Image 1 (cartoon, one colour):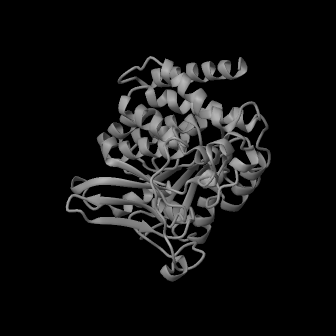
Image 2 (image 1 turned 30 degrees about the vertical axis):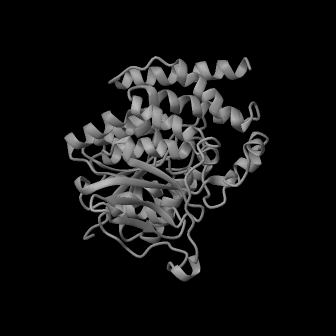
Image 3 (image 1 turned 135 degrees about the vertical axis):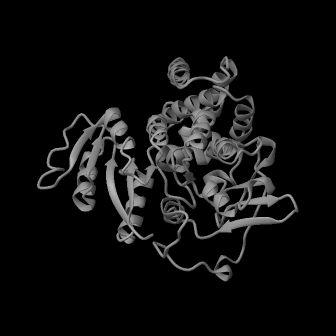
Length: 383
């Protein structure tokens, strides 16, 4: 890079956002931060603003961001209007969408409309509106570089998408890989959050425990790479060394491997197509890795994956329904209102009753999302 790449981070106080700032701190001569946007963690956002000195800071808290702009030329923004202003700023070379939830969709579309490249770590953007987002990105010539380790791995492996026969997405199997269905039914929140390989937010960690996370990644992969659902395979790989792979039409399989660290895919996404020495715990050693295991997922124990395939193949608002119902059920589990296994049962019940809208507008997508969430909450309340 001859000049610093200008970047904004939507979701700077979350797991991906904070790790992205660690990457940028290491590569401080490569990046200039235009804006930081956080949620309700005002104190952390203030510390980030003081340290990285962005031009804009946006928050979603009822509490004022007092002092963040003291002695600095920082403009304080708030809420959806603030995100809109950040994503309309063509000074940005790339925007990292690192927030969780549906709040990431509209800023992503706004950035695409303004021709700004996206480093995407927000699952809901493509699960809810993948057809719309990818079509708009293609029209505007915008690059969408995935941050998820699996999709980042696939992105690194592909030279010509037209020569790809199959995508192979790996899954760690989560904390219940070697547990029985009966043991999963009795699982506590603490057990569900004890992921053996990755340190992530609470919601995504529960999704990893049920493998719904992998189901959502299948839908994302379909949109990102334009691969048919029948040509996307999931394989369980407990060591999380092989992050994913592709099979070419000639039978060659190319995999991306490395230590399980989110710093690496984050750095790849925001610095693409260049690579630099950044944060890494050590150089990878095949000898130290020693053993790599692979097995087919148990769809009886982890039925969420099959439900995600069904939603993806159905299309339209089926994936919106799947995502919203699952998310509300996960929240209920984290609050101790339901058992782990009920997450799938509730999601499927809501999904089976959903009347799918094909080719929905953005407004219809958000309307379905809201309606499904209400139905799910009502179902849980009446259980």
